[in-house]
Length: 178
Image (cartoon, rainbow, N blue to C red):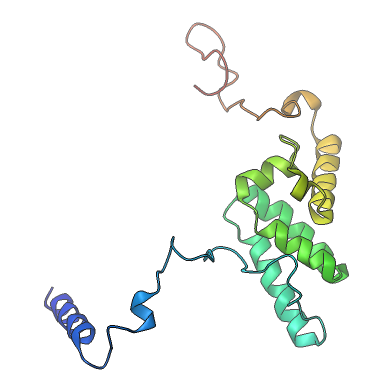
């Protein structure tokens, strides 16, 4: 407890010291929520030609960064589907397809999953993205190959059946896992 008190006192002294001016950009700059750039995106505009594929080091760095972003999204289904697709196809993508991939990686997880699994149609601005089309084609092909149509949601509808669908009768839910 005493060490926490010492830390608090030292921080207070550092903030009040004359070595840090009150006009410092560090203290005026908002951390989250107020800046125009989100800390969770790639900060890359789709029309921005800052993708450098000229030398092997920059190419390797870009590919590793994109591969990491595709495998570590925090949404297990997307981690698996998107990460596997990027791992298999990243070396064959040209600059325009890499920009399309960055645009897909900047999308929100729930929306992206609904679009590539066929639960919803993507908006026009995203629907023409070649990477999204390739991902959706792969997922739909796998669904057609490995799953029975009655186990899937009808197009345009979310999948709402739950783990307790088997419980029928007086005590069972009418639908889903209610």
